[in-house]
Image (cartoon, rainbow, N blue to C red; front, side, top):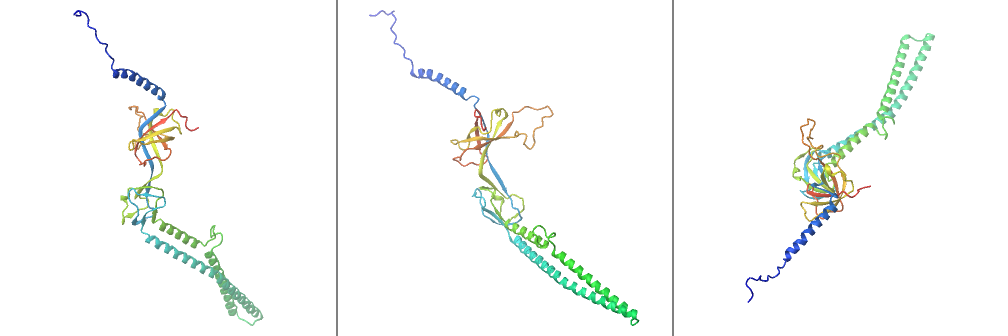
Length: 350
């Protein structure tokens, strides 16, 4: 038998493989993180204070009137030039007809003035002939008076006839001047040489025609219809009052509000990476389009007043426009939240 006091031989304890893996993995992770931090530290600046922006066009009529037709619905896609709604055209059609009548009246007035110019020449010729006749008659009567075969009464009568003929001649000449003034000259007709009354009537007709065309309101840009519930058939539309909105789709960008401390190495043209809260799997490439001219606080309705000395310094935010490169795979909706990371190691535009 073996001695009871002798030490029993113990089997060699095996190391756990999990422990061994952990001992090797943890240092590797630490080293890997350190290398990643070293490689990327100072390369990127990022912000989650960023939002999708698109042009928002408020649509308002240029003429007033009752709305008679609405041809769009909420969230409908429209192209530039599509008809949105119509305003009652009848008052403006009547105005066009009235303007056409005014043109006809002005043309008639011109024709009458031109006729008066031509007839005034005949009147002047007749008046001149009467003056010459009266002058010869008076001369004959004076010659008879000198011979003693006439009376002063006859001399006075023929003198009055001469004065009357002269007055008629002067009136005919004045009438001709008035007729010529009514017709107008090249100097008074303006650059196009048009009769002033006709030119004014044509201008009124053009304005009435333009207002008639403006009763059909068309989309100025392509985009998505919004807030169409403000537009109802039968209501009165006022010029300059917005009745619906179009969110333009021609251009979409990201407005990213970066801290002022992030701007030192930021340049226009540097690449950016954009992600969206609404689309977690979507990554969009972009570039720095422009850097704002002022902080958000300066452009607020009530900018801060720090002249009293009783203030707390707050890191300001500066809006940076991030242009989207290419066409995103998902619909861009104005106002969506986004995260933006800019690679500031790039030089940007040269």
